[in-house]
Image (cartoon, rainbow, N blue to C red; front, side, top):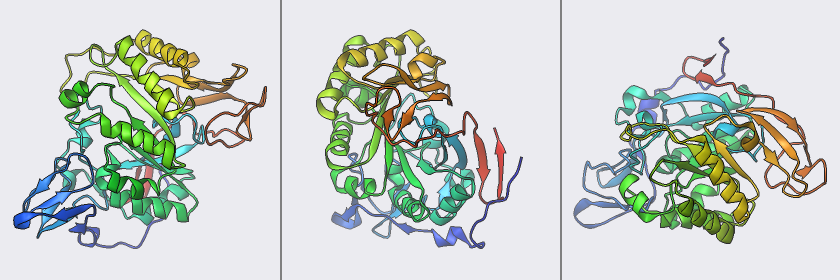
Length: 377
């Protein structure tokens, strides 16, 4: 199946976005520059790239090498991000670039996030072309996903602005690894986010993600206290690494104490990938137990993911306990929400909802902006 997608007149995008000026940096001694974007705090001499690989010192200035370049475009169910309380059932135009500012040994998108072949992998698209394509395809929102948009924040912000001009929402799927300096401007343009809380120990972050836990917790607290961004949390549970009942209990208690009881939490299944092929896939029982622990800790909306379990992936009213959004993978069944409230008892359901459910279902549609076509996958 193919469909024409309107886009701008052809331009030489390689030249247009070559040496695109990066932000959030300052000069230090001997021509070096210091990156202020993420807590990794890379110091780059001439020609050096940061840990993320996409930010580079050229002529003593920070350059974003992936502006206007994407590893691909796709229309997904918004529940796949995963977001269960933000415009349920609607389609979302998804794209990413390459590189990452974390070094997760278990990365589920490693072919994208670890890629250093951005010129080979990329399609070219301006922010307005992306917003126009999303609008043409009747999407309600655009997701910055597949790799972390923090490292291409300039491109994400400009695309979010273009989306807002067309009445579309902007969604970030992120690990939340960003500095205080950059956080405010990045999230100023974001309507919803899914933050990947990879574990609840510094040991895990240090050895398996080459990062730190505390900056992620700081981002979560800041989102809750300082913004109106709707956000949900994902915890990928890896057997023997971050799936103990004790760790889950501490994490859930922290969430309730610091973020409240209405932040949805998704416990999702790991599958062996990248540098952790020796691990087994997460048993469904582990996810179901974690969900039960979350609910026991007071979290009102807890879900399982990457397994088939309709009961633990549906949404229930925290007051009357009736099912208000029925889910079969990404396809919605019964939908009992009106004006953001339970249709049975009138209790408020946390989130951003339309009065009618979206009908996108499980479809995944790959899109080529340059070739003006789309195809189902």
